[in-house]
Amino acid sequence: MYHLIGRIIAKKKNSQHLILTGLQKYLPAIPEGTKVLIGYSEKFLKKYTIKEWKIHKSHIFLLLDLPDVITESTNFNEMGVFLEENTLKELLDSNKDETSLYGYTVVDTDSGRTIGEIIDIWYLPANDVYEVKTESGILPIPIIGDVISKIDDENKILYINIIDGLLDLTN
Image 1 (cartoon, rainbow, N blue to C red):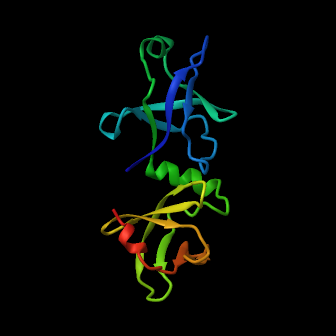
Image 2: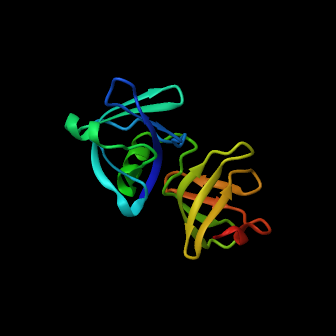
Image 3: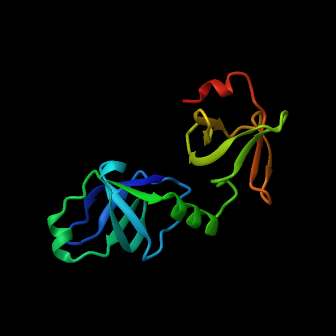
């Protein structure tokens, strides 16, 4: 499984650096040597190695480890940059903050029933949302006091209260 981490919007003038935008807030700096996949969709991805990752305001400057001729002749504009699931988990585990519960198991506080696993976090204006992979699809869980019951970091479990209509949001 692959996770979209950003989109290439341009190539920096007089440079081989690609400019990424639309990055997730939880994403840490990606170290040199990390493998990324680039393409218009998951079906058309090619693997590349990061040579440099520089944060500049709301953008990232990405330099790939490629011969200059390939970078000059390839138009990466509008392509997505993806990380393999295991690579993303390793990066998040090594740079974990208090809001990043990627990979935690979500459990219903009342019944003890496992709902699924957190696979992404959406940072939204009203409230942030955990994206949870369930047996029947993806369930957005709002990060609000009425829903989040308890976080067990030792066992990587997020306990939630199932409020009316919550499970109906699964797609």
